[in-house]
Image 1 (cartoon, rainbow, N blue to C red):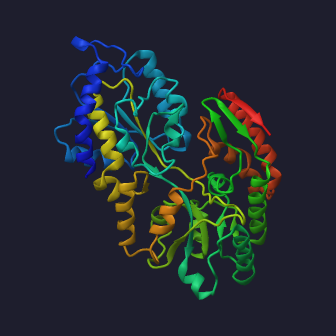
Image 2: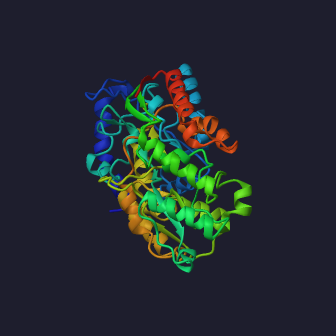
Image 3: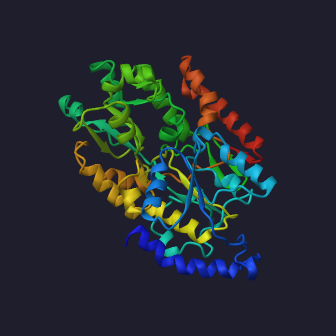
Length: 441
């Protein structure tokens, strides 16, 4: 069944739910589930998207000419700009202006949007459970508060081990299955092929690639406004020590993979690179222009003896439906289509879809592109269900904290291990400033 047909199936049920929640003559009454829909009227559907998701809104408009769209381009809250939160605060004060549907590049929008009364509860008569069950396990965790779903995950950014299959075969190296094997290979590369790299530790999302995968408890969100921070525990220090070891050896870059210097001097010297699912298209194929037939995918290394494999996550967007929408039926139809449609998610979207059906189509397209060395499907599908749930989605930005606390020290030659206490203090301070009750262990 296509995404469009799925939307049509429940559209009638949605109309009934909306009617039950709205009083006669356009008035408003509270539905049994506690959600009070705004009066339902005609008019265009206002959709906010970033530049990358503009293609999604335009494709929906093309396929649904009967639905008038007002498509607004904004920054998608990139790099935690908080643009959406600021505008919603303004709209709340003036009593109008809210968009019907919004895409955000951030996974933590619900941490404030629910409290601000902006985002509607999707699993309360708006979207059937049978539809919601089609997301990857844990994919919608960032959207769930107290058991209620307030957004839909657009794409996953599960981490895997990208590698240059051509070089690995040429040098007779084996893909490392454990972190000790990974470190040993990194040291060997530093000695036998100076200048070549097995990873990079200089990006703001370094903790999400490495420390999240190591089950580091630096970001355990335990409630809507509660967090436990243990950034110096063994699960954190073991990975920090590994990174320090390879930075010192010279096979782990201390710079950013998105810097012009890295692109100029290191892009063609990557042997291994732990990173999210979007590295294949955005980084190797897009930025680095790595020739086809070289890049392959393997599972993230694991710590020996750990019975539960774990990976990190870097990004992945969310779609929010406004609780103030006067067009709930049309807005929900768009929301379901944009997150499940093969035509968009499977064939156009740049990232790994959070919806399992669309992900199969997306993977088939990637595998048939001829770009990758071998089939990338297995490792990516497996990793999609292995994102460690102990790393939460608080209102504060872990990337911004790392960039301000750890990156300058790393650039100055300090070890990551030595910077972990300062990282913990910074997380605690940011959490408290955002109203979180903090527990330290």
